View (cartoon, rainbow, N blue to C red):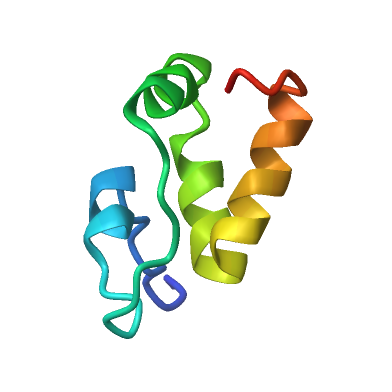
Length: 70
């Protein structure tokens, strides 16, 4: 007997395309986004933006790259 079907996981692209009540959640400069992608942190940044907006994304990025150049 099979249990209820699990909700399919969403790709990073799908998460990024979701509407956040029509409000801008965060802004990440392109060079920083390239570093995020190289580090494989897209999902973490998207979740941070959804949960806490720009401030939460900034905290996450400072934890990953403490240098002010990022």
